[in-house]
Image (cartoon, rainbow, N blue to C red):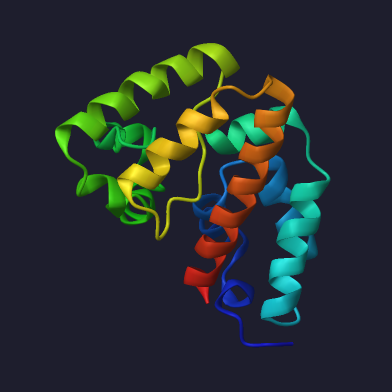
Length: 166
């Protein structure tokens, strides 16, 4: 077996580490059932495979583990497990001007009202303006299209967070 850090954790520690990567309980359980992982590739493939078997309620549970993009004040107790990661991932928003932030917050509210879940985007490496452009484009999607896109974005976020475990 490989020396992946995740394999050396006890069950409770592994659960917590995985939950920091993705808040969906079914995903965490699925990953714990597969552990130990042979190598990094097996870890990533398992993460995607488990994610692909999940449904809407699992996606929504995962989305609940995120603050809204641009609403840096929501990095509070509710998001304590992922706050540091999310804050770093959203670092592009911290450099946004007030007009961009104001528009982003308004669109976040509109998006949440329309779809019933927050706007999910893999924010790493994106500027505030790029994220604003994405929400402006995606807000016109149907709910099913948007749920599918958001699930794909969540999978990218999860992979980045798994990489930090290595």
